[in-house]
Length: 246
Image (cartoon, rainbow, N blue to C red; front, side, top):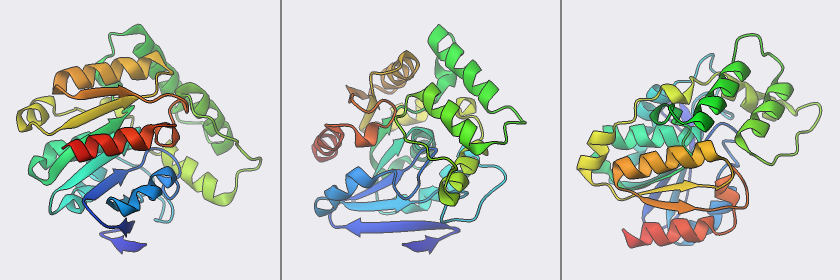
């Protein structure tokens, strides 16, 4: 792992470059299931600023992180994002369309695109309450968060120091529903795009449908792990088939 412009990046494998942007959680293990693809692709695995092994931050902003990670696309790369990282990936692609060979986003919490849907409005309300100032216990925050978004996770008590640092990073993130997705720019650019959901929570499916429709993107459902789509059965096959098709 090397340090680039203030954050750590691991690069493994050979072949076409694929930049992976992790969500709100384990930066170093988020794409563990994709490591087996290193014989077909060069995997570029950054740890977003604020997440271990990087120093902590008081606030984490998706717009700033999109700017920080965009240089990793140099030379044209495929771009893959999950959850909060999928929102960042959409912004990266919109700001650097000529450097993106293809775009894959899994359950981006860009709830602002579909707030009129009751399931989306309810989930945003629950998340707003969770992220209100005063929630200072990382273990309780994590338990409530994974229950809301649909992640299967064994939570040790007490939290190991590394896990607590990751949770505190997630607690510092700017609400992703505030993101302004650059639909017009992305659609005009014609970047081949795949939007994936896990088929477990209506709010995520609704958002994925809206994004896919507005971008003219391909749409897939990869079930079996809830919101933890990168570890779901069939995800690597879906991802590989799409990347190789473009």
